[in-house]
Every structure is written in structure tokens, then in C-alpha cells.
Image (cartoon, rainbow, N blue to C red; front, side):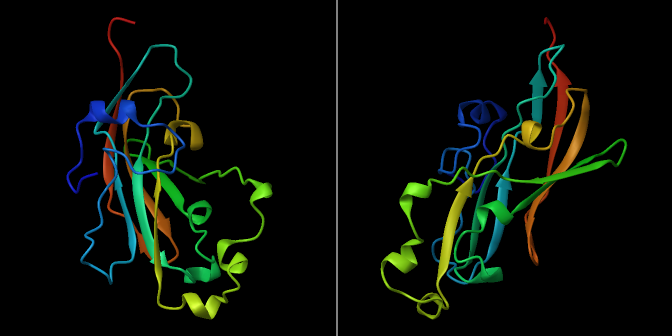
Length: 170
């Protein structure tokens, strides 16, 4: 985890679609207890084989929000919207992360502990996300560049630029 974007090759090691911290995860300063929002890291250049339908583009992010933000009860990951704007055509694509819920887990932890939403007032929660936006947003495998960001309610992440290139020799 780092505040500086990692090298492009590091994103190849990230499990796409996972929700855990890794070497590409943006760090939120632990002493900045008032921070709320989103930070993302992404490769600056993604190469894909000729003939690919969708490039693999993993974006790694960290979100910190009040537990009760937007009345989401701490479950904000599915509400985050990822946006990619094609820099040449200005076409935008957006989507939300898909989370497969384990119904066997039962009610939220808050309810299992007999706590109310009021008990979580003024408490924050931090979560990580690593979607493959190529698949999530059905981005075409064509050379070009995208401006990418994440948003939730009033918060917008930093903006990253990603250049897509056809891998030579394929």
C-alpha cells in the first residue's frame, strides 16, 4: 500500500474483483481521522493482445466514509460508481461493483451485536476495492486513453489517466 502510484506491472499481480488491500492500494493517512472520500490508483498504460474483446484494467481504491453515510450501514462498496471517459470520443461509461453476498452470514454485524445505527454515529469505516473496469464497464480493446474516477454521493476520487495499447508481437 502506498500514496504513490505503483509501477504499471504491479497491477498484473492484483486479484481483479477482490476487496483486499495490496501493493497497489492507495493509503489513507492513519492520523487524518477526519478524512472521508475515495482514492484510486491505476496503471498509466495497459497493453492487451490483438484480438482481445475487453482489456484487463484493474483499478485499486480505498474508501473511507461515516458508517451511516447515505444510510448505507457501512455497505458502501456496491454504491460506488466507477466512471471512464474516452479522451478521444468523450463517450463515458459507468458502473457499480458487483458483490456476491453470502446469505449464510445472516444479518449485519451491527444487528448481531444488538447495536443500533445511533451506536455507529460519528464512526467511520474503510474498505478496499479492485475492480477490473475493462470487464465492469465493457471497455473495448482498442487503442486510446481514458480518464477514470470513482464517486459516491458528494465525494469524487482523484482522477487517473489510462492509456490502452495493443501489445506488439501478438
